[in-house]
Image (cartoon, rainbow, N blue to C red; front, top):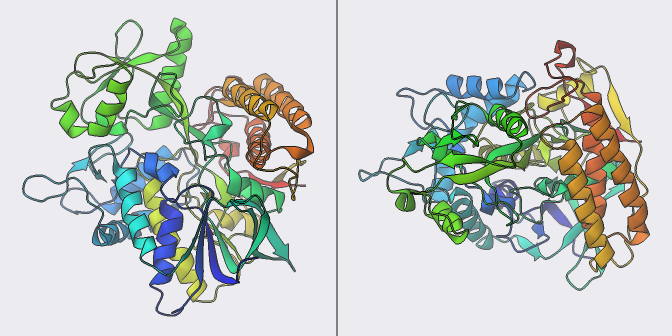
Length: 527
């Protein structure tokens, strides 16, 4: 057992590390014992893979926070919480400037002015980038350097298995240590910032660590989650055997790259929000009977200098972006929903907080606006620490938490029966057998086929049958990552089956239109 912590942070992406840095600077909790638990090295997170930049209004000359808010609400297809979006756009610029003060280096012109790009769904250029399309790596570098300078205890290679809940309060987590032993890591406050669940699908831009661990822990502890049916598919992932799929950043389209179909024709406005572009691409691929379309970036000047990271990845695949069209297809990218929180990141379990991709703050609604994800982690992490400093003990009816506490406008909670999956001590956790690897692949393929970019009642039912079969075959010694994928898959399928409409990144072939009576989020709990 590790010593008692004041704040345990699970996850080392932009959200988790931002919280650790803010806690270290706390004027109230001098000497606060802060721990950061990461199942891999600090730098091995989805943040590192993020090519997209950070969207923030850093100048009021032409842009405004009102415009940024309007773009976010439009992309969210009627399900964003307006108060949460207002927090994001108004506090975001200050957080970007704080990151610059920590040492993050963003792209500037010869005069030293930040270069601002326009991406899909944005009405104005407001996205800052680093290294063309290496923004996540630069942000992660700056944050890791800052965290290592603090007094935070860093537990690398530790896998959080389950929440410790005693007396109706979260008291930390049980975690698998690098030596294979299960340990209790106790804390007065626990912040879940474990990222997303792109590894639910066989085609994804997410790293192998993105297995929905924090979301699964919350579900199994009875914590409310919402909007988990909204898995955003990035439209321009390189169609290539490499996994995770190399991402061809939105910035390429912002600079003039074109999407072409199998006949070489344009068919969609490349700067529409991602859900609309992905939906149009999927329809055109089905119509033409092809597995991929094309991104034409041959008209972009100085490609290798402006986008060195992308240039390196596509050239490694044997492609020349200056002379060849690049094969593209949508890939699972970002989970817009997660653990329900209020505007301070408080969940409905006292002592448990959440921020970043694992959380449902209400910002993203049915579809995340490009480059709002890094910003959300940067904004909500300090809010969590500030709420802890104030002595906050539970959630308020704000943000995504509002309908849960007030009972409106949601008609109720969706209940899902837990699968027969392993619980701690997890037997031989950390030593997955070959058949477990095959079962994970079976699950991922089924989710891609039946619960991916295009769904129906029949495809969802077929996928659920596979999930149940995989859970039964995995047995009591299923490695924790497979267990977590199974739990999150069940939650996604339950919510997707209930949402009988097409909205944002959730597309039903049997219910192709938006249904006004579903203009609310579905809150889900395990029975």
